[in-house]
Amino acid sequence: MFSFFQKKAVDFFSADEKAQIVQAIQDAERRTSGEVRVYIESRCAYVDPIRRARELFEQLNMHATDARNAVLVYMATKDRQLAIFGDQGIHDKVGNAFWNAEVAKMLQHFNKQDYGTGISIVVKEIGEALVEHFPYDAKGDKNELPDDIVFGK
Image (cartoon, rainbow, N blue to C red; front, side, top):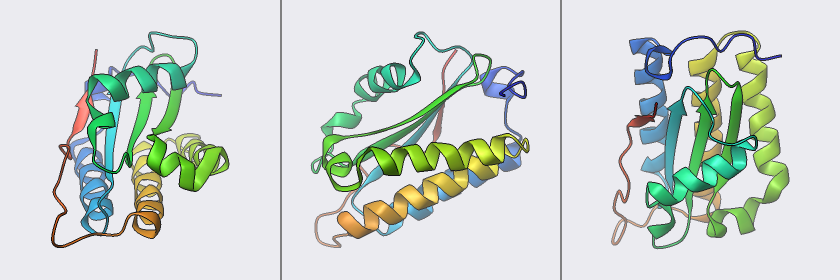
């Protein structure tokens, strides 16, 4: 099903796709106190991509947001694995069904080899869920995590 993942993680996206994803992250975070990060690597260290996403979530200090409302979109290109991991604050609001639906949407785009759009759309939808449950607070909101795509090995 995932035979389209062949390139190294860092070379997987075009410059335009990278810009599209970063813009989606910035747009999503503009209206919420929540944080979204995208992590791309070639190989998944575990059979279960959710376990790897959780590990990276901790390594990136995403658990340190004030409202526990950070979300990591994870993809291992060569191992054809992906996952979305949300911290306790947002997970309690949206639940497993939301994450599973977002992964399914990404896969629909990936099956058409439209990776940048797949991730961007999901990031925007995660942003909408964050806006609903964690709206932007002009007085105290700060960008707690970088907006760039993280490329692993």
